[in-house]
Structures are given as structure tokens and as C-alpha cells.
Image (cartoon, rainbow, N blue to C red; front, side, top):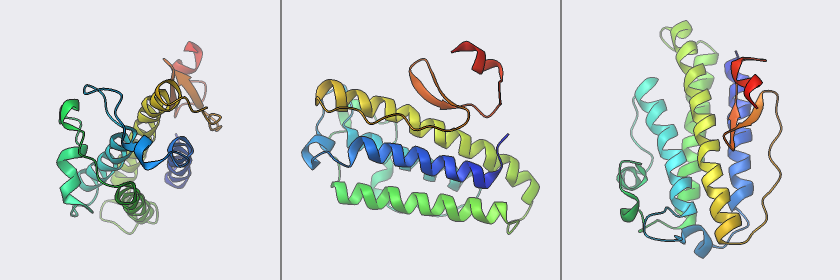
Length: 185
């Protein structure tokens, strides 16, 4: 299993890949929806950050949302047809960056033992980060489909890392070296 600082680097790698998928697009392309029952790239960007904040907040450190107005919109329980009124790309970027800073701060505190129950939170933090990384890549797949199929932009190369592979077409960080999933691809 990965240690926390290694997982933070993988989290950054996943976020950097997300940035490769959208940073060269126009604001109109980021907020464009192929149809009513699909989500714009911008929704996925906000949702990735929303889930990261929600998990950090609820599993490791109670703290307020960096942008409470986005919480309902970026929740996947919100039906796709109601995901159209997106904030600006600048606001989405600030939200993503703030959440990533909070993830780093909290997981850094856990890794350094600056929390109550540091061993227990290390276990929680490891699983939490693995889930956040794979959630980031999950939505990257959907972002890439809109980018390539609907908008006609080429895709950047996949990131490379030990134990990063594709499962069912999705990038997945497999925490187990040569584990059961490794034999399935």
C-alpha cells in the first residue's frame, strides 16, 4: 500500500491530468453540454473538487465548504438536467485549487502526526486519497469523451505511474502491486 505522501503525489498527478484535459479549452467549451441529460466538463471539474472536500471534511476534519453555493450544484444527487447553470471557469478553478490545498494540508497533518489518533487517521487518509484519485480519473474519462468525441479535440497522453492502469476503459490507481486486478487487463 502507498504511504500518504506518495498518495498526495498521485493525487497531484491525477489533478494535473485533469488540467491537461481542459485547460486549453475555451470557457464556452468547458460549460457546454452535449444535451440536457449530460454534464458539461465544468460540472465534472466542480464535482471532482466537491467530492474531495466532502470526503476530507466528513472523514478527517470538519470544516466549512470553500464555496457553499456550489455544494448543491456539484452534488451527483442533483439530476443531470439541473446541472446547467455553472459558475465561471475562474470560480471553478479557484474552488478546485482551494480544495486541493485543503487536501494537502489535512493529509500533511495526518502524515506528520499532528492529529489525534494519527495511526487510525493514516489508515483512513490512505483509503480516502485512493478513492479521491480514482474518482478524479473516473470523471477524467467522461471529460475526455466530451473533449474528443463532442468537441473534436485530441486527447493528451495518459499519465504514467507505477500501478496506474486502465480498467474497463478508466484510469485506475491499483494500490496492490501485482494484485488481483493487475491480472485482468
